[in-house]
Length: 208
Length: 147
Image (cartoon, rainbow over all chains, first blue to last red):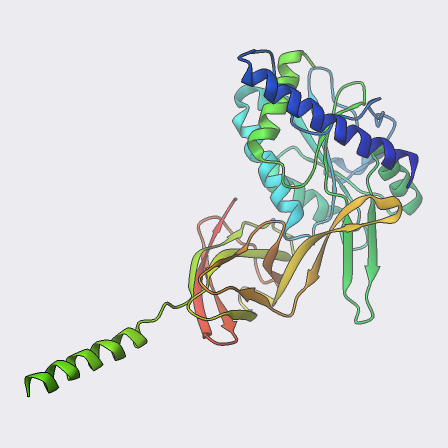
């Protein structure tokens, strides 16, 4: 088990304890903010140095950090993914719509883990089906992609079976990144759109 | 004579009861809208079992919808170093319990549509033929929506 895994599971446990503490506080009638529902890692990983070509913007470099006053949501996925990826992105869309005006302060980027099949237009088309101004990050340089995933603590594997079927496994977190390039919170697959919305509202209320 | 009539009536009722045994039911079949260039889609629904255990063994759609449909399951797997990853695998059948539900839902069982003929658009509808080991073929109308 790598050091990262150890710390991740530790922080998950701490996040669990924090969640229980928050519940207890609510139970006591304390109306202090409930905090974040997602996973908070300490220290917050710095992903602002991850720069990849944005195929939604002619392949120009895009650094995964939010613009001031905004939040950037980053997802590692692929477009031949019919279940997990569209479910996550559709839930995020519901959450962002629920934010009202603050929804305009959210940017979304997908990083494809399957650049062979995900040609540039395809990734851009895919993210734009969910978010009109979404960013489509794609590199054919496997080292660059692996380095980006490493910064996030994301994992993926693309394998071709004996009968030629391409199988993709990927960690399915949505990462919330601030203008300093830090991951403030990340949501595992299955996080309810209500919880995503709650966390985004909390972060905007805290001042991003 | 009266007794014979009564007996006859009772027999008829028994036979009728046998004929109306609980059958398998399908609720809320839906598929998510797809992007213009997206080649895969997923169909979800809830299947409620009848009086006997059954299994969904295959699903088919017209070629005007997709080239192929397969039964799939998304599941958690562990990558190098123990990082949790989601992956999808084909399954040969989906069990339907007696008098219970099996959900085809995001993150679990689903019918994967491969090589979509055209994008799945909000408000449209298409037919999926479900083949069960015992109940045989059942056609369902799948509603396309954003989520």
